[in-house]
Image 1: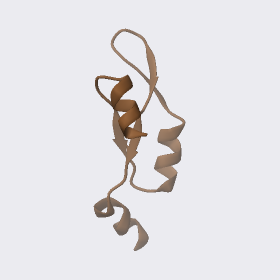
Image 2: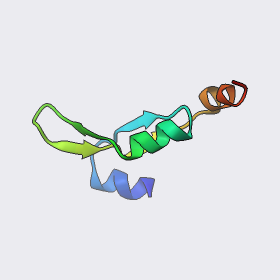
Image 3: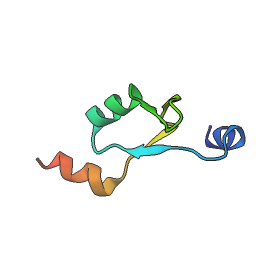
Image 4: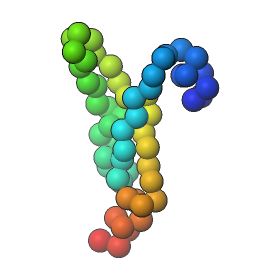
Length: 57
């Protein structure tokens, strides 16, 4: 899927999710660029460095 996206677009926009709730919010979020065009994020980055501490709260 990543290869397909890279062929379709010159650059991709990813955002980090620290837990499942933030990932769900990101999935349903749009953003507007400087030209007024609305976009969705191309992907979500999740790192063990930010996810694991959430398990111990």
